[in-house]
Length: 132
Image 1: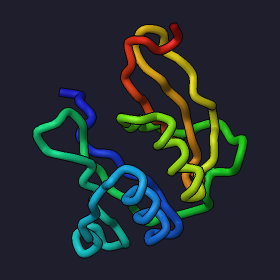
Image 2: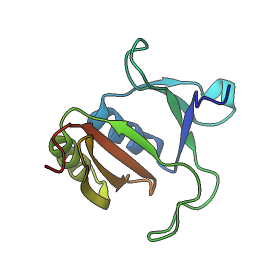
Image 3: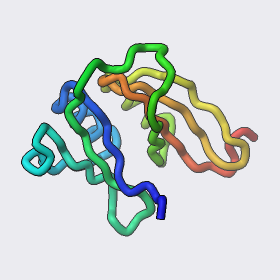
Image 4: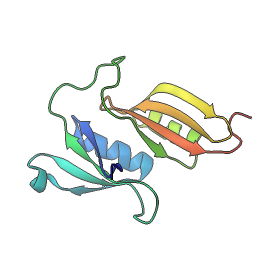
């Protein structure tokens, strides 16, 4: 036991967050608000046969994180096939760079972004030639 099985992204503007993650990563959303007793949308992040987990967008209950504030929680990293195209889509849809693209030598490209809701997330493109 102890395996991460679900994630939640706290958001102030549910429709904006659904559009952001849906457009960039192709996530699909299911309305689970009735079960949660608040605005809560299950996020289907990919094929159930692939490695990974599903999660949800849930209504934020407080202030959004402040820019420059230290992370309090977990940062989720999302696997992508084309780092540069994904970064361009993130920026086009209102995200900002938190930590620019860098090489994990011989393994992958990695970087971190802030979504329009103020949440930190990473993207990761496997590439054995990264950093060479």
